[in-house]
Image 1 (cartoon, rainbow, N blue to C red):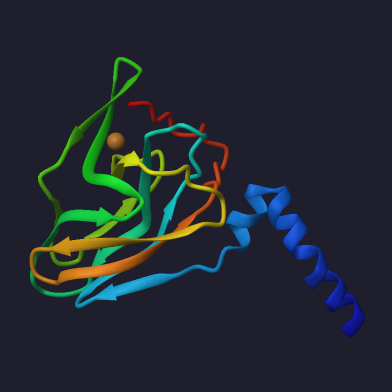
Image 2: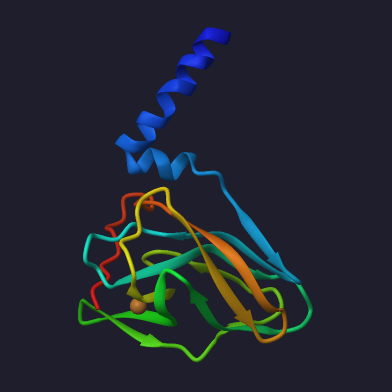
Amino acid sequence: MQARRRAIALLAPAALLASGLIAARSAVAHGFRAGALVIDHPYAPPTPGGARTGAVYFRTLKNTGREADRLLSATTTVAESMELHSSTIVDNVMRMRPLAAIDLPPGADLKVRHGGEIHLMLIGLKAPLKNGDRFTVRLKFERAGEHDVVVQVQQPRTDGKPPSGHSH
Ligand SMILES: [Cu+2]
């Protein structure tokens, strides 16, 4: 049993490199608290070489408190700027527009996920995001103030859904 476990441990890194899917599944879930807010599992898909934009998502963004809050902005060292975006499909074309803020009323439980309606846009990426990388994003909330979260770069699970097109 002991030997078998060791063999698995040795194989794991190769498997991680070989399959983004496995990496995504085995990535340790991580989350952050900012006062009454819970920022669960920030992640960003890898970007192709030369891409100037990327996206950051959260498994969930929750407000467990009694006061409304709002996500006002985000910054990071890996890109020149970040914007809060909403995306909608209009005539089969994804349209994005910048949001002034993301509202977090009491009890809010937003899924800010790939293929969803809200994301954080990385604009002017300084280098491609590679599977397994981590980087820090500073989130600024109206009430909770500024908080740093660590974003995990990983190939999102598609769960049978098509990968979200992201071209702008
Ligand atoms: Cu966008």
